[in-house]
Length: 355
Ligand code: NAD
Image (tube, rainbow, N blue to C red):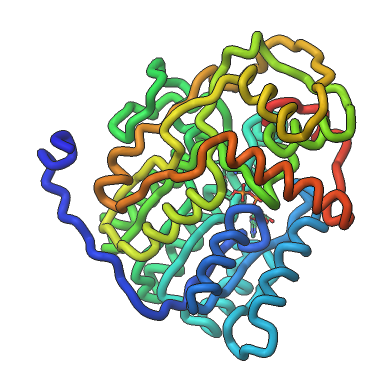
């Protein structure tokens, strides 16, 4: 890719071999999948998660149980610390006991619309929390600090195909602003202390164990149960939906390659319209949706699509799962989880529509 080659970024070879990785937010959707992958390949994992009730805690407890069962009887493979990443004594204790050399920071308050209603919790968990973790990471000599940013930072942009070169100075929600603030602070920690730090801008992630406040879960759930589905806008808005295994692949590639300071988009690289999305959900759930048309919502972006050339060039990342395959896998998982009573739906979050 000529654009990237012109900048002569030095390619970092992957670090192979054992790691002990601190995964914050490891009881959540993306964090628990990353932890599962790392444990499977032989790494040890330390999880820090406050188990907040942004959505049903039962889902997070189920995620931790699954991880614990994977390494049952294997001493030292998985440690779990339940608490707030902003709690100084608690986090210092975790770092002193575990001395992790690799950090995958997924803990955050997520969601665009709730951040408009309650911005302070986003400043606390996302900005203060990330700063606190980078402070500890630099003090404890962490080799690589990888953290979750978000495609929402592109919110105020007029383009439709987002590259990392884009100006992201116009975030349109407190959530987006908090993620942009993390990226800025990450640069500062790299500059001041040579902390290797990489921010990953995820584009709408979905899949088994996905967040119940987000559209893929919510649409599958509501169509399955014959409940009304709120469609915001005329159905032409489009998003780059990315299947969880592709995101995990990108996160792990990034953990293994400590760049001094980089920001990467991680997405599928093409968008799906809301209308096509609903059609696919109907097909794979096997029921017709009961749609209620609603006006567009403030803070929502009409179109998101990732330019993933940089991640492809510097991380060797390439999304493999098509949206149809992903929705089919998610719908199968939902059927299983619903039958086994693994999920519980929080009614007020269900009213939010496209998450
Ligand atoms: P999630 O809510 O399932 O997971 C986040 C976890 O972090 C939760 O288990 C929560 O209890 C924990 N947490 C939150 N604040 C904490 C705190 N102060 N201390 C300790 N633990 C805390 O969300 P997710 O979808 O897995 O998202 C993971 C990361 O990816 C987040 O940073 C999110 O902003 C980012 N992201 C997600 C998406 C997506 O589509 N899911 C898109 C863009 C960015």
